[in-house]
Image (tube, rainbow, N blue to C red; front, side, top):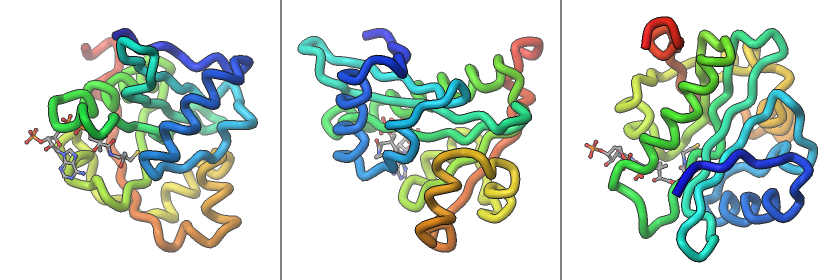
Length: 162
Ligand SMILES: CC(C)(COP(=O)(O)OP(=O)(O)OC[C@H]1O[C@@H](n2cnc3c(N)ncnc32)[C@H](O)[C@@H]1OP(=O)(O)O)[C@@H](O)C(=O)NCCC(=O)NCCS
């Protein structure tokens, strides 16, 4: 099934994604107040159920991308879907000019390391992406101090190097 972009005006699609991310225990920050810098996609199974999602939010200067909402339905995990979904977001962010990808992940570090991410300073992430919904929420709630940050450069994924 193809990856379909979430149309910010499509309340039903946003509700489907919200339920899917909640079941995967991922943040819902910003889903109800989308910005043009937030891009999200879902993949649906034969019955229309969401089976995968991915996305990112760009910094205001476009240099940095916060990868978010990468999830695979439990029954479909460990068969490569997560890597494909993550690479879709990374490649799209690079195509839109981002040079540096960042993300928060407390549980899936080894998955991200296989995709080229290294441990990063959570405060450096917050400084690079201060205007993203996730950083704003994590700052306001105090959760930032408990988060684990990861980062990678995107030079190898820029259209000119592919
Ligand atoms: C993390 C997640 C997206 C991975 O999806 P997936 O379809 O299982 O990923 P892949 O099959 O592409 O896995 C690629 C590799 O990473 C490994 N891997 C996947 N998830 C892992 C995890 N949580 N911890 C350690 N290794 C993991 C796989 O075993 C595989 O290793 P291999 O290449 O040696 O076979 C999925 O487990 C998920 O939806 N988790 C809940 C949401 C979440 O935590 N998202 C990440 C934060 S945004």
